[in-house]
View 1 (cartoon, rainbow, N blue to C red):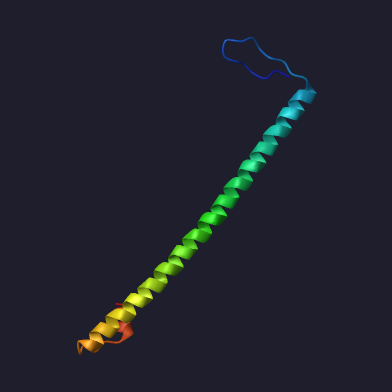
View 2 (cartoon, rainbow, N blue to C red):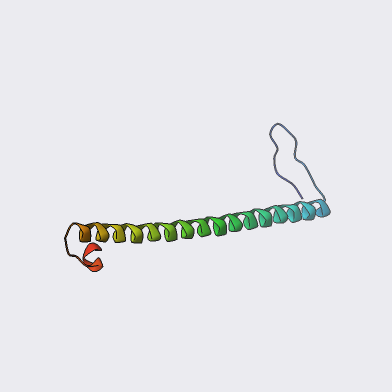
Length: 84
C-alpha cells in the first residue's frame, strides 16, 4: 500500500499490517475527539441553561421591584401590564 507523496521524499510503502495499525490509531483519535467535543457541548449547554434560568429569576425580581415602586408611588398596574 502506498502512503502517498511526502514533501521532497520518495514514495513510502507500508505493509497491510502497518496500514491497519494506522487506520486503528486514526479511528481511536477520531473517537477521542468526538467524545471531547460531545462533552464540551453538554457542559456548554448546561452553562447556557443555568444562565438563562438566572436571567429569568432576575427579570422576575426586577418586575416585582418595579411593581412595588409603582405601588409606593400610587400608580396602579397589574403584573400582566408590566410584561407588555
